[in-house]
Length: 477
Figure 1 (tube, rainbow, N blue to C red):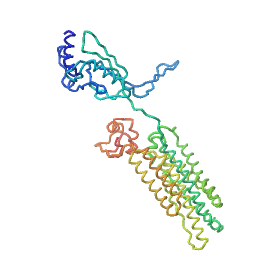
Figure 2 (cartoon, helix red, strand yellow):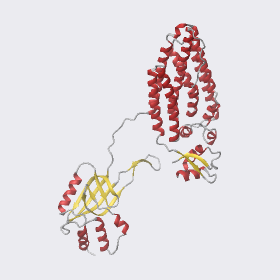
Figure 3 (cartoon, rainbow, N blue to C red):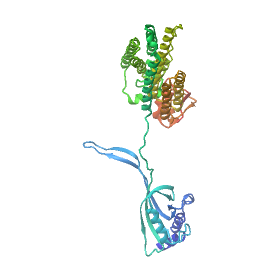
Figure 4 (cartoon, helix red, strand yellow):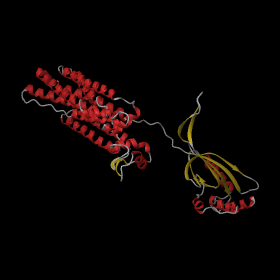
C-alpha cells in the first residue's frame, strides 16, 4: 500500500478514530471495536487535531545518592514525577470529522493556543481531559502532502500553585492555655483570700488543712496499681501488651520511637515518681503556712499536680488520675462566725485553685494522648470538654470572669487538638469470624496489610496472637 493511498484516506476523514480505522483498513486489518469506540477527538484549548501516535512519560522523582568506598547507591524518593505527553498529530484541510476549515488557519489557531499564557485543557485520545501546560510544538509542511500538516506536540501535566501557609500547632496552643489558666487561677485565688487571711491563724490553718487533704489524695493516687501497669505496657514485645496500657494508640507509637526499657528501669522510675509527689506535697503544705504569699502557694500547688501527672507514663492513666485529683472536695467548717466565714472562704478558694491546677495538667495530658480511632478521639473530646465546661460554669457563677474566659479558650483548644489528630482516623467497627485465626491472617484479610497485626492484637485484646477472638472491635480501615 503506497503513501498516497494512506494520505488520501486520512485526508478524507481527518479525525483520530476515523484516521486509525482508515490506516488499519489500508494495512489490511481491522481495529478492535471497543478500543476504537472509546477514542476521543483530540484538541488543545478547543482547537481540534488528529493524532497518529502518542507517548506518555511517567515515573518517580528519585535523587540517586552515591558515596565513595561504598557499593551501590541510596535512592531517595522525592515524589511522583509530572507526566509528559508527546503527540504526533496532523491537521487536514476541511476534515470530514472535526471540520476546521483551511489547514493554514487551523495551524495558526493551534500556534496561538500553544503561545497563550497559563494552563490549558488537552483532550487526549485515550486519557481524556487533562490539565496541561504546553512546552513546545513543531509543524512539518511538505510540498508532496499539500493540505496535510504533520505536528509534534509536547505537554507537561500542570500542577497547582501553592504558597506557604501558617498552621497553628495545636500542642503549643494547649500549653499556652494551660499556662494562662494557671496564672489566672492564682490571681483569682489571691483576690478571694486577700481579706480572709487578715482574720488570723485559724484561717491560715484552714489553708494548711485543705492543702494537707489534697496532698494525701495525691499520695493515694500515686500508689495506684493500674498506673504502674500502664508503665509496664511500654515494654517491648507482647509482655507489655498483656499488662494492658490504657492508651493503646500511645503505647503503639511509643514502642516505635522510644528505646526499650527493662522492668528494673520501670521500678526505679516509679520509685522516683512517688518520691517527687511526696516532696511536692510537703512543699505545698509548707507554703500553705505562708498562704499570704499567693504566688509561691500557687506555684507549689501546680507543682504537686505536675508531679502526679508525670508519675503516669501512659497518658490514659495520667488523665484518669488528674480527673480524680480534680474532684477532691474538702469538708466545710460548721460555724457562721466571722472567722468561720473566712475559713470557709479560704477553704473554697484553695479547693478552686487545686481543682484548676489539676485541670491545667489535664489539658497538657490531652496533648500526649494519642487517639487510636475517630471514636476514641470523639469520646475523649466529650469527656474533657464536659470537665472544662463544668469548671467554667462554676467560675462564672462565682464572678471569676478571667478564669471563665481562660477555661472556654482551653475547651476550644482541646477540641481543635483532638479534631486535628483524630478527626481523620478510621472509625471502629465490629468484626466476626467463624474460627480463631492468627493475627497475621486477619490483618491481611481485613486491611491487606499484615504489618498491622500487632495493632490488631491490641485492639482485639487477644490472649494469644495465633488465636484471635472470633468477635471483636477494630478499626474499619
